[in-house]
Each structure stands twice: as C-alpha cells, then as structure tokens.
Amino acid sequence: MKFIKVESSAISGAAHQGKELFIEFKGGKVYKYLNVNQSVFKALLEADSVGKFFNSKVRNSYFWKEYTPTKESVFGDFIDGLFR
Image 1 (cartoon, helix red, strand yellow):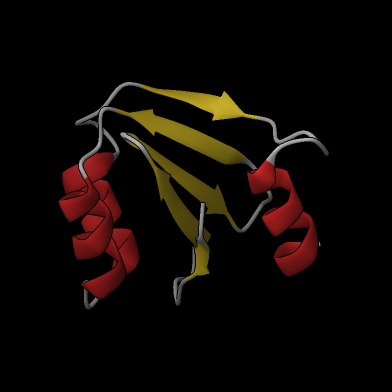
Image 2 (cartoon, rainbow, N blue to C red; image 1 turned 120 degrees about the vertical axis):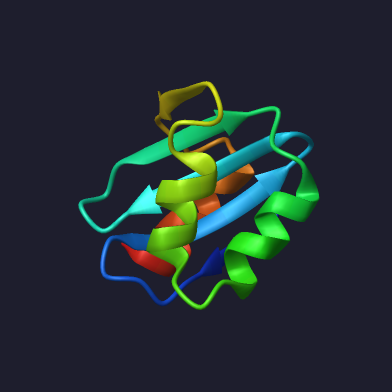
C-alpha cells in the first residue's frame, strides 16, 4: 500500500488498498472507509481542495471505522516513517 501525504489543513495523508481508503487527520487519528473505488482515491488526490472533496464525497458516503495501525502492518510502517 502506498501512503501519500496531501496538502490540507485537516488531513495529513491518504492510502488506498483493495476497496479501503485510509485517511489520517492532522490530530493523528486514522479512519478506514470501506468499499471505496480507486477512482475516488485518485479524485481525492487530484482535488483542488482535499478537505472539501473529502467532506462532500467521502465523509458521509461510506461506512468507516477508526483504524489503529500495528507495527506489523504495512500501513503502520508508512505512518511511522512519514508522520511520526
């Protein structure tokens, strides 16, 4: 999984794996959004405003849950390397 840092006042970065979109917020919490197509992830990365796109197209459109990466997870390794 490739985790990408984004320019946003609220969001630190995003990743997509399978049909799951991972969003890390500036406060450090990570949320996993389920059944998100790759095209939505690509549009998020290309949006003029990542935060506005997230709020209008993702936040209330997909089931989500808070995600806690572990040292064993690839995503956790990316977070540890990029944001901590």
